[in-house]
Amino acid sequence: MTNGEDMQLADKHSAEPPPPPGKGTHVLVVDDNVEIRDLIAIAVRRAGAEAVTLASTEVAAALRQYPVFAVITDVMMPDRDGLEVLDDVVSFDPSISVLLISGYGPFYLGIAARLAGPLNARHVETQMKPVRLRDIIAFVERARARGDEPVAGAPAAGLPPRTGA
Image 1 (cartoon, rainbow, N blue to C red):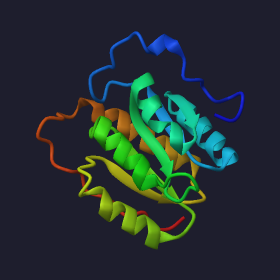
Image 2: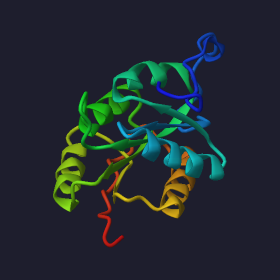
Image 3: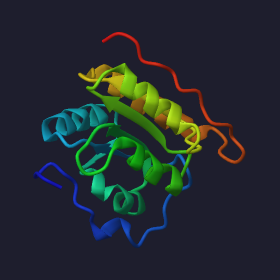
Image 4: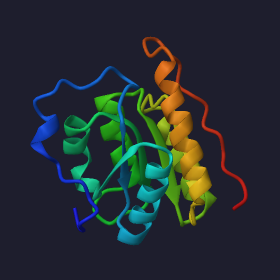
């Protein structure tokens, strides 16, 4: 965690059991670029959710610490890539929605989206950088709405391609 806006992994959630799948209040925002992370966090808050901004190495701990219903992660990061983050998320709770973002072009996003299926990720979307705040808000709203969907036995969700900027 790198700045004052980052929520610290506090003890206040550690004593509480995690909420049922899809009933979380938090979105994890994972990007190696602090400025992008902070901008995405603003959009998450505008959508009415709590934003937890962090480095890719802190994802597993944050998933246990916060009631998470969605994760927004960069695909290409120096310590761990977005697919490793996706694997952490799916291993913890495959019903958590994930938005993979990348500035490296649609090729990398396409590969990431195709690899999400074998990981049994249920709700994965992709978006090119620069991200539009309205698209982040819309993703958070869709992710929150999925909290009402049944989880047990649900098939993997389709991976809609992102076209245009």
